[in-house]
Image 1 (cartoon, one colour):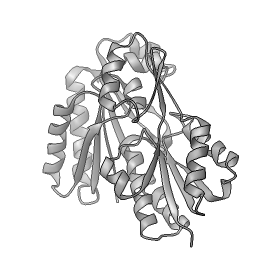
Image 2 (tube, one colour):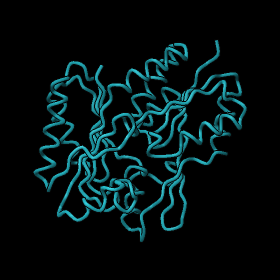
Image 3 (cartoon, one colour):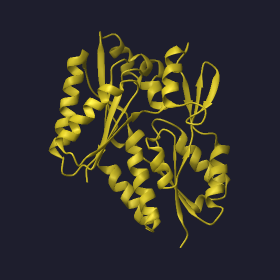
Length: 283
């Protein structure tokens, strides 16, 4: 039976230890800031990106990995006859998944490469990637791995708080809602991604709205505390506040593993300063 290898993109939230332990291949996106391009995670860190974003004259641009980069990775991974499962950020957020599919065809490996839309990003995407990598190491079949990933995807939650709408509006991510929301004073929005579609779940004003958001999400976690093993908290530039939020989750159930980490440039670019997300799935 051929070996199964796992690849993903750099919008994923994984620790360096997880990447190494489970032999995960991360294909980096490209970031352009005021005309200068960077390879995500290679020549710019997440914290450095936020600093550069805040100093930039215009909104940074993020783009999917070049198809040639994907072709090279796929050829390398399949050179020994291995199969590959690729799990990528939601198609609604990026063309990465389409680039991966095209690269598999160009590499002549379409039959050996299975591509999955995580319908999310960040740690939610990471949960799927980790499940696939652990299953692969355990010797599970491709069909079994896909079923497991889809099962996790079906119960995943992404709850995101955006406190400054400037970047979202500039990037056009709010569509027709942009103009109406932009005219409202001190508006914050709560975003969700059901079935891979970014939606505004609620909107409100100021810190009171944010506190209500936290309380709602914490209650949902408490209501399912016996069926949630892991929670991801990803942020743009508020590490201390996010650690406090993590402690509240650990108080609900100390057995829940909470990873607090900076989010990727593709999310930080559009969500802006002060944004954060809480991600989990129910077993």
